[in-house]
Image 1: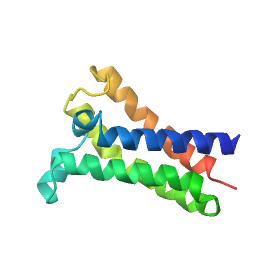
Image 2: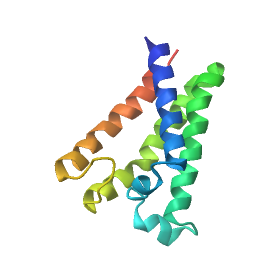
Image 3: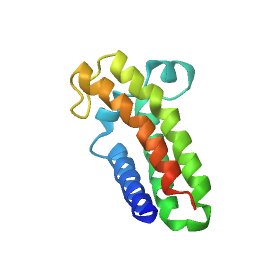
Length: 126
């Protein structure tokens, strides 16, 4: 069961990462907090591209590096925690994206982030 969950998570991460680079770039930019671009010398598109690349690498690593799956799971869980402020910014800023066009949808999505963290950790345990 863990193996299936890990492979499903890996595929989801690669798909999400590729979507960051191509068809959903503008949608993902809605999640980048303004503070990020005010503090760092990067624009929102750069953040989206970089996070997409990280998602692809983490997803691929879940499958390609089975001996390191526990570490990769921890890195992926940390990644989910690191991008959570973007989800909060989207909710607080009432920014539409990915069909999240209501407060209920945007705040409901926030509840899913801990599930992703747990999924990453559980599916990579030995």
